[in-house]
Amino acid sequence: MSKIERYQQLLSPDMMYSQQAITLLSKKLLPQKRYDHVLRVLDTALILAKKFDIADKEKITIAAIFHDFAKGMTSDELAQYALIYNIDLGEAIPSAYHAIVGSWMVSHFFNIHDEDIIQAIYYHTTGSTNFLTNKIGAILFLADYIEPGRPHKIDHIQQFIPQNLNRALREVVKSKVCRTIHQDKKIDNHSINFYHYLLKEE
Ligand SMILES: [Fe+2]
Ligand SMILES: [Fe+2]
Image (cartoon, rainbow, N blue to C red; front, side, top):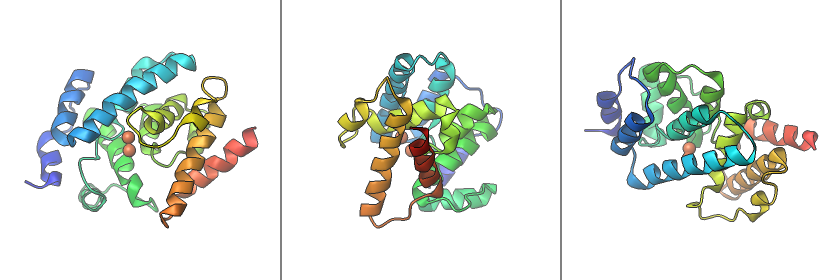
């Protein structure tokens, strides 16, 4: 069975969300390494929420647990999946396909339409100016980058936690954009806009 078929077999509209059910589903859909990453992102996001005094633990939990939900497919498979279901990938870079498809899955299959959650998942790879007001997105973006399993250095980000959320976010975008440049890959416009807004905020 192809990975696309696996998703088709396990997902259907009007599924009920519960943390336990999504954890079980994720275990079936994601490679073990990705699944472990998701659990670390969830832990990290909840720790960050406490540090930044953000009360909405439920929304943060949902956004974190679903953020890489579509990552059991490669970017080619995600492009195919998007064609089948008419999901608009627009000008997105391939590394962001799983974020766009994942946010679509959350609203389509699980009936979750909270804009903070949907946008948090949609933009978790690139970042977005949406995160200047959407704290769920800001926390997810940060947690995804600094969770303890990541191989890269995070001291330059940690030093701004918890006193300066925007500065911590700017350091994440900067690191991601620099890495993308070194890989000779295309930079998403949302990342650039986000970076410029964060510069202005200082
Ligand atoms: Fe992701
Ligand atoms: Fe992730």
